[in-house]
Length: 272
Ligand code: ADP
Image (cartoon, rainbow, N blue to C red; front, side, top):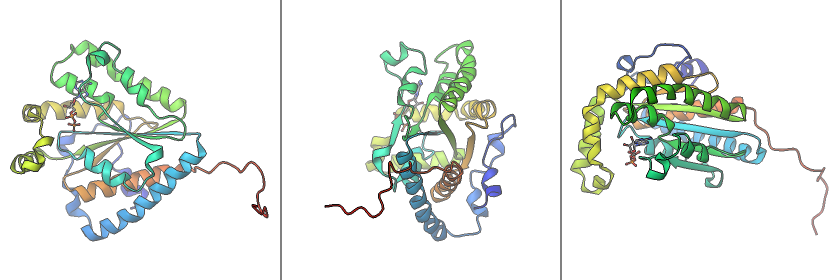
């Protein structure tokens, strides 16, 4: 995919996106087949492995990749498919569920900051600090004046991470309301998937429109050049993975990462 094709998924800072108008079924316009996409995925997986290896060796940058999306939007699956070839020793996934009492007794970024990447690390957030202006807002867990000011806190926090050497990429997995219904129903129909069901998913689903409205605000107010949001059409899993992998490979290649210089010239040395 060309840079121009990928650029359209990025939320330009200051732009006005409206999720109601974005097609979660975009794969229907894809000119290739699923088989071609899977073939391309294999080579993207290898490229990502190379990039991560270099980043790990270079040890001077931090990479943070954020995944957000409605229930059943495919966050777990995307993480598994996009990163399955990378070396697990340099990559960590942090999953943020409902905060504990201890976490709630701190500021909302306390638990997040602890999981942010160090030099040479790639960290994937499965849900994130954005829950503190999404579910908190939709479920009225805090008054408006609390979650409203968090937009600034988050933008400033991400800017600080960037200034300190963190490259940030944020993916919103966009599924349609009907696709969510279908996926939740599939879980209900398959007893092997019952462990995945949280009764709250059904309650949350009733709040779909409020979630979309909150996501629209998040995407419009917190996308920055140094920490952009990407909206990924995610009704088809293979298409979702293909776009995310293409974006990551393109962006990480731009960083021109290099292995550190050897401490001396080792050529010609015979190891005894
Ligand atoms: P999954 O991500 O697979 O749905 P869980 O079953 O652990 O995993 O669900 C996480 C739940 O925790 C979600 O409903 C999410 O909205 C909620 N959650 C995450 N962060 C917060 C937060 N800061 N405040 C309240 N709820 C949160």
